[in-house]
Image (cartoon, rainbow, N blue to C red; front, side, top):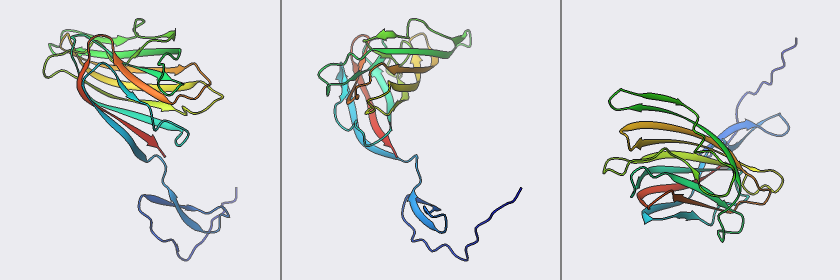
Length: 214
C-alpha cells in the first residue's frame, strides 16, 4: 500500500482567533476555518417564580444543533418536575407531539438504596404535554436540578426533530437521580420556539441559557 504525503516548507497562514488550520479545497495549501463544535450564546433567561420560561427567538436555520443549559433550577413544589415543550407557530401553541424514552440512576444519601432502570411514567408516546426532564426534585433551600438538552436541526422540514438530555437532581427523598432522556418531536414543520414549564407550582429560580453549535 502506497503512502502519499504532501510536503510543505512552511505554513503561510495568518492566525485567526478561535479558528483552526485545515487543507484548502485544492489540497495544496493550508487555510484557517472554524474549528467546529464552538458554542455561540444566543439568549439566557433567569426564572423568578415563573410558571414557564419561553424562548421565542433565535431558534432558526442558523445552526443545525442547539443546546440549552440549566443551572440550579429551584422549584416551588416538593417533588415537582420541570419539562419541555415545542412550538411550530412562534410560541402561539406549545403542543407538538413527542415520543421519548428514558433511564436513570439514583443513590440515597443514607447509602440505603440504589436504582438503575427505566421509568414508564416519564416517557411519552405521541404526547403533547410536557416532556419531564428530572425526577421529582426537592424544594428545600439547598435542593435543585441542573442539566442540558440538545435539540437537533429544528428548522428542517423533512425529518422529525430529535432531542437528548441529561439532568441531575436532588430528589425529594434525599437522593441524587441522574436522568437520561431521548426522543423526537414528531413534526416535519420547523420548530421555532421552546418552552419550559413544571408539573406543579413554579420555577422559583435558576438560569436557562441557549447556545448554537457551530
